[in-house]
Image 1 (cartoon, rainbow, N blue to C red):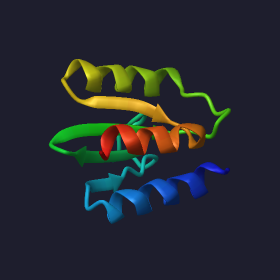
Image 2: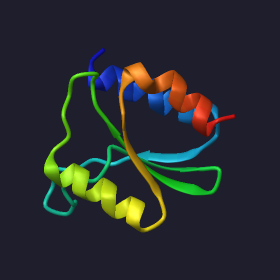
Image 3: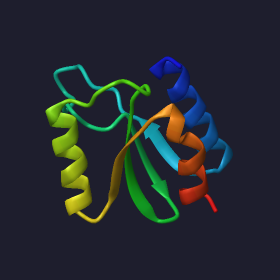
Image 4: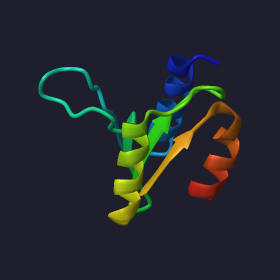
Length: 93
C-alpha cells in the first residue's frame, strides 16, 4: 500500500472516531522538518504519528522528533499498514 493511500485510511478512521487530528505539511520556509505526518489528540493524549509503508524507513530527524514527543509525555510512533489493526485496538477500545 502506498503511503498516500494509507494516510487516507488513517485520516478517515480518525475522523470516524471523532478524534482531533491534522495532517502536518512540511516543506515550506515556515514549517519545521521532521514533524510526524499526523498530529492527533486521542483520549486526551497527544499523538505524533509518522506514517510509513511496510518497508519505508524514518529519517534520523523523524526519529529525533518522535523521541522528543515521548520525552515530553506524548505518544509518538511510526505507524505502518501491517500494524493498523493492532493500533486501532490499542488506542480505540
